[in-house]
Length: 293
Ligand code: NAD
View 1 (cartoon, rainbow, N blue to C red):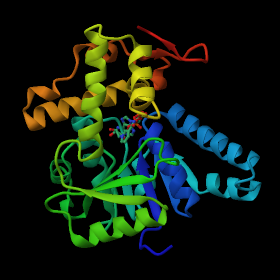
View 2 (view 1 turned 45 degrees about the vertical axis):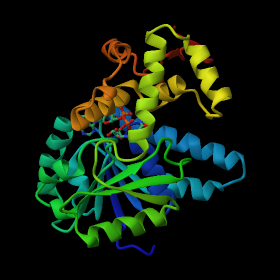
View 3 (view 1 turned 60 degrees about the vertical axis):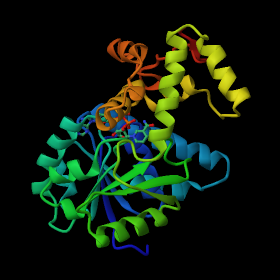
């Protein structure tokens, strides 16, 4: 490996954390994966293994590679496992207060020269960095979902991020085989600044009765050649994450065009968060997705 990073810590074993763990382990990094939920940790490792099993069945990897990848991932619900990490990537839920709390507990455990990265979709990297004891070693590394399949990673430096932190992170991501785009530290960076208002508008289109879930998604798939409809994509991202990103855009840019659609708020209040809870704009409980409106 060409970078100085060898041991990677990951906080949050949800959709993103498990994907990041998989690509890091597949590129030869040793991974310490953390979550507050032991169940999430067990599910994450089982999901990674079943993804690798499919790769094995397709002849893309052999059994030895599969077990080596899984073998490089250790799980723990304690931050002590991060004491020898070169970088820790925070991929917990999109909530600034929660992330600050995590950094508070994490910093005392880490080596003084360890880099902290956040996978936040929208929150200010400079502000998150300021809540740590090492803002110069803090950076935004924004992976896309699903991590193993998506080629892009946005790299975001805070005002205080040092060049060395940026270069080490850049070479680490290159070793994962990903392509980097650099974004300035503005709310939601590049991809979500453009993508989420489109999704929010699709939800307004549903809310105002312009079209049904099916007609909106069909319109954008066949009329704009998008691989997924915007409501299907919202379910895939997670409606709580979509709402958080819109709130950050709305508050951070103070423009009413970013107002989160009330229907999105309702779905989140109901706990219908999309695929991860089996219900969102579609109901996934019986296998084939059924529109909920
Ligand atoms: P998720 O809900 O699937 O997973 C979040 C995980 O964080 C859960 O397993 C939860 O148990 C865990 N968690 C909560 N508090 C914790 C704590 N104190 N310590 C350790 N773990 C904790 O969410 P996700 O989709 O994986 O998103 C995670 C982060 O990645 C968010 O910041 C999100 O904005 C960002 N992100 C999401 C996407 C996407 O499409 N979903 C894409 C890029 C970035």
